[in-house]
Image (cartoon, rainbow, N blue to C red):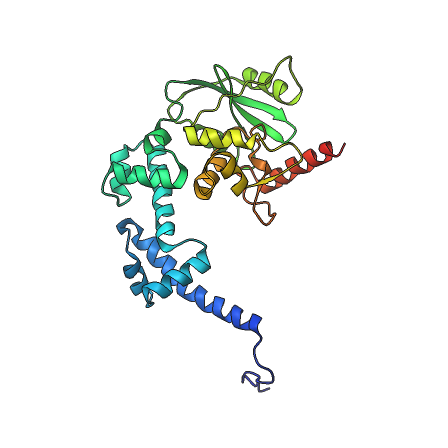
Length: 296
């Protein structure tokens, strides 16, 4: 049987089809661009160099890449460098070594990159929890097994143990306070779980360990009442940085005290439930239970 492979010409392409065709063409170009940037980000290439690598003019490349990826090529490279530098710092690298290994000229450039990405300095990212003794342990919660981190003056962290297991949950909490001394204490965790989810004679003491800006954002989250939500832009405004969306998002993602510092109540401007560190299913469950309770 023969097949006619000739495209039909019975009707002109609609505007929607034209847009889809344009986005398909953009994907091919941007896939090449992303691969090239992934190989060359340590050199922090200029816009001209990146555009030349994919055969586009700098102006056209900037426009197409930003439309397709949602950020500029420069911001994309900065995000890769920031993520790599943070990993190096968490693994014990010095600020100078992290700067040089990510293609930056020195600590001052790394400082500027961290301030732009999450409003903390590299030293603050590396020294989190320095001088503290933290007790950690497991206890049941309404949202699964909780991993509680207790500082001398109160609760410093609450995460959850999921399918990845205890080692992964502990590593996730440990990296938030890498310079602290850690002691396993399940009794302290259970005591904190009772205070958090059953009730106690007084308010639950929460210790916020982080940069001044992060603490500002975490306190701003407390303005969102149970049963309600807010956007990232609103939280940025409450924290005094109405245009710092990226840094505010990083601060929300770095919140160590799940549920009690309600980062789960932050949603996208269009109403979507965006990423939640402890899982979108858990975020939906938290919001659902709070909505039911608020409705009486």
